[in-house]
Length: 63
Image (cartoon, rainbow, N blue to C red; front, side, top):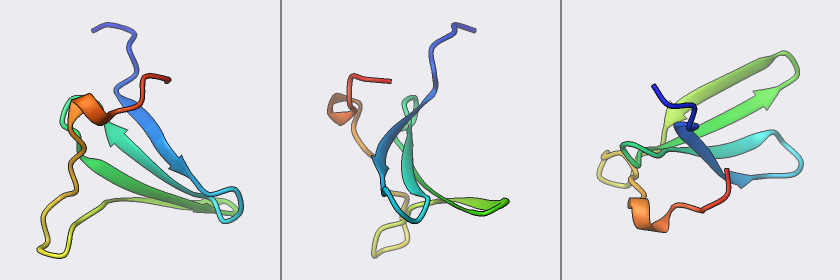
């Protein structure tokens, strides 16, 4: 497997430890939140219960 990173961070809140990561292969968005020594990751869903998907053409170029 190539050394390319599979996930790219698309959002980061300065205070609060909240980030959104996107899987570059599937486009699925994940919400990550950390607080102290704990953290959690979950799939972001839309109002109909489907995963939020970002098209590859809209992903940021930076890693």
